[in-house]
Structure formats: C-alpha cells, structure tokens
Image (cartoon, rainbow, N blue to C red; front, side, top):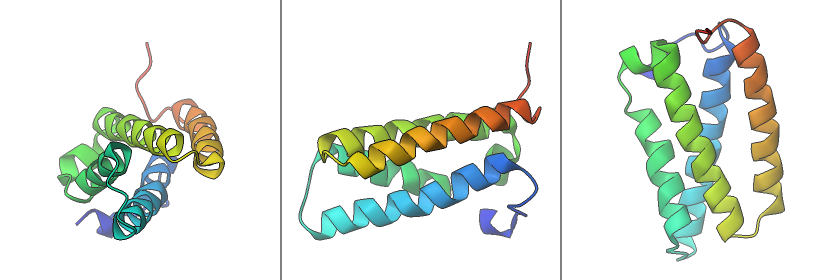
Length: 110
C-alpha cells in the first residue's frame, strides 16, 4: 500500500523507506541465526509495524515522524546489544539527515 507513494517527493519518506527494509533484513538475519535477544525482536516489530501503517499515518508528517523516532530507537537498541559499530554509526548519520527534514518545513514548527 505505502510503496505506491511517490517516495521522491519528500525526504521524510525516503528516510523511512530504506531504513525499514534494512531493519527488517537485519532482524530476520539475526533471528535466522537463532539470536533471540530482545533488541532483535524490538527492531523486527518496529520495522514490521511500518509495513502495515495506514496511508493516513504515512501522509501525516507528525505520525510519520513518530514512527521514524521509534525505528531509530530500535536501531540503537539493536546496535548496542549486538555491539555493532556499523549500525550505530549509520543511525547517527540517519539522525543527522533528519535534521534536514525539519528544515524542509515538512514538520510544523512553533
């Protein structure tokens, strides 16, 4: 459903689409390796919830930003629990790119 959206219109959509797929791939890979840690389940559930969001939440800037924050927390928990420097560094890069989303006047200010 949400894949039909034009992901190039706003940087906020792009900042959710790719990390969701990466989060699902990481979590599924760790579960396949029989790593049943809580951070893996948190990342899987957070990224999986994004797939089933109604279109109204995806088109609403505040609703979308809430799910982005939850996905960031899932990645941070996963990176800390698995001692993955790569995940933690990419999550920091992702947070920096979200600063530009706020400057695009996509989110309400004031």
